[in-house]
Image (cartoon, rainbow, N blue to C red; front, side, top):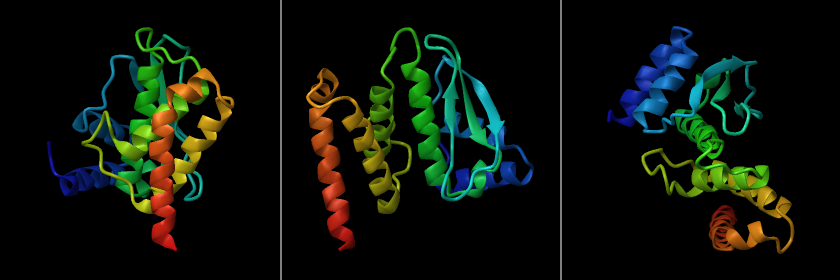
Length: 174
């Protein structure tokens, strides 16, 4: 695998050429995020710094499309890589073999991976600012699973890890 600076240079070249989809495809291949259930990328409206939306679309059990902003690579590469990884996790969750029907569970799993990189350790870590933001998002979805529900019990240990990470990050900024 190429180094992160090499990836950055290649992605910037794609970006300058207006080849957003080619850049995203390059990254999922380089970082081993491919999945047979992935149908391809499509572009959506431009993102704003405070709101970058990527979505995985398609019926459960069917091939999935990931829609990314046309200006995806105007933003930090480490953040875009983590967001692409998040969406590729959704692609995997929507396969017949790995089907995760509950949206809260899907989001919990994807945000947890963004924080701890269990399945994809090759994806660069996020800075603390982003980790705090995504830890809070993960906990929102955990809370939506229902107080004391089977899903909450299933992820209780991961929640503790997330709580500990968030506490650590909060203490660092005080």
